[in-house]
Image 1: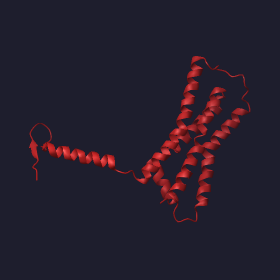
Image 2 (image 1 turned 90 degrees about the horizontal axis):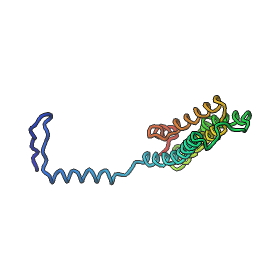
Image 3 (image 1 turned 30 degrees about the horizontal axis):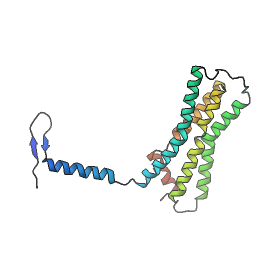
Image 4 (image 1 turned 120 degrees about the vertical axis):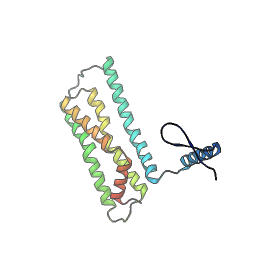
Length: 186
């Protein structure tokens, strides 16, 4: 057995370890970190986050490009298209996709699995991906609203519904755990 010797100096008492023990301990920590297997929740969370980001990032990039194009004058600031009927339709569609459609999908899924003791993980992941996919259509509707210069009421309402969808349907570990508990996922 090797002895740990205290190191004198200001502050807390430190222990000096022989170099070969430090190397062995470092290797054990590295092996534990690199060879640890992710839990199902983490693997599921990673797959859902990948889906989430692959759907949300293109919408954000397109909005930033449109903003830059309008700022540099490549796209005119005012469109000649009348948006009298289009703006309310897009507004209702955006809110429906961000709020109502996910509630409907959740209700249909809950109804479908109501008699099952447990829900299979692949079915749950498909449900979550569908839920994220439907909710994240809302940010894509901001692009035509911005380019066609919708009235502020409609544009801000659509932006709020897109932010709600992006915030609420982010697949955090806590949210996944909660929904797994609700739907009895094993």
